[in-house]
Length: 362
Image 1 (cartoon, helix red, strand yellow):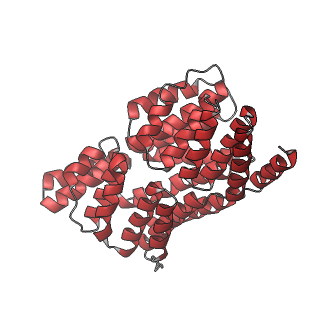
Image 2 (tube, rainbow, N blue to C red):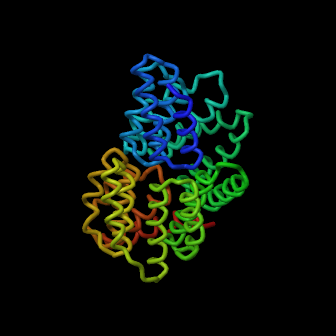
Image 3 (cartoon, rainbow, N blue to C red):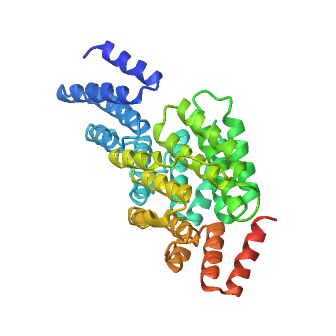
């Protein structure tokens, strides 16, 4: 097998041409497998899996990672990569099972990556007690990058706890720390996206304005594009449309449905669902959110938030179910409680929600 093919694949990777890199690495891996060269099979297949993940093709990524697994590549970093792919594919619960018992490794760098991935899964699933345990363990690691990861994940937990100002400060600190690091465009974009989404949450709670989210979301969109990540870039663009509509601007919402259909084709159900929610908000039309709820069966926290949005847009939402699903997310629980109180014309419930919201904004 020629070294030229390997160098060409590395060049595609360096240029962030993820689709072409995925094809190139997959071809190398399959030819190595045919020749029973397990070392090259493992290395090339993992790089194919990473390229396909960055190209937002989780099914292709899973195929490549399975080849690496069959060739004997079963280390902690491989578990982390596979978990990330499964999360993209909408299977956060399965992803958590994969990394649940794999942080026991003497390699601190690998443990930091695994903890970071597991924290992201716990936040997505609303498993706050486990997230706090992992934060404490991550805090004990003394390796470059672990501190930034901890600040970012702590901010995510703070947001769920309703410590909104501290969460915003954490996301801002993470974005600033990542600003000058090579190869950090994607992580920085993630932190900016969190700040933008938090600004819209503030506005929904009656504090601040939707326009406050725009610069953060614009920065996130720019960062994801620089990182060559089309899926997260589309998500940021969808949220940017939300912010502009809520700020009173006129936007063209129709492309959101085309983007959602494209995400479905790529095997990205959570991205497709998020884009359809953005469309509902941009058009003030909750009629398509029932189908979104069906997609989010394995993502209860996201499902509960969609029910609250459905109610706020005037749809027939099951708010009792929503409150059960967003119990771990204090601000969204308050939004759901407020929506239910308004629908039932229950003054006590509305006052309870208002008191909770006031606590978040102190």
